[in-house]
Amino acid sequence: MALDHGTPVIFNTGQGAQFTSTEWTERLKRAGVLISMDGQGSALDNVFVERLWCTVKYEDIYLRGYESPFELEQGPGGVPAVLQPPAAPHSP
Image (cartoon, rainbow, N blue to C red; front, side, top):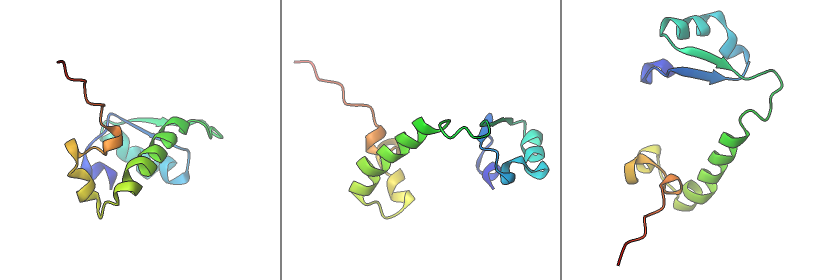
């Protein structure tokens, strides 16, 4: 499960049944995680994150053809190249 890999400060989700069940919300509360849910019918809540991942996929992942998540993580700092800050210009 997600909490087996670390404990976030805030867990943001939609209002699907899998995220509103008592079992799941109680597990988050026991772990000290704050719960944040998108408003009902808020289709645009994630538009910026969705756009970012679309850019990452089309400008890095699909172009480089990584064979596995491990190979992707071997990039500079484990971050896809499209998310790396541009190199600073060098002084003469």
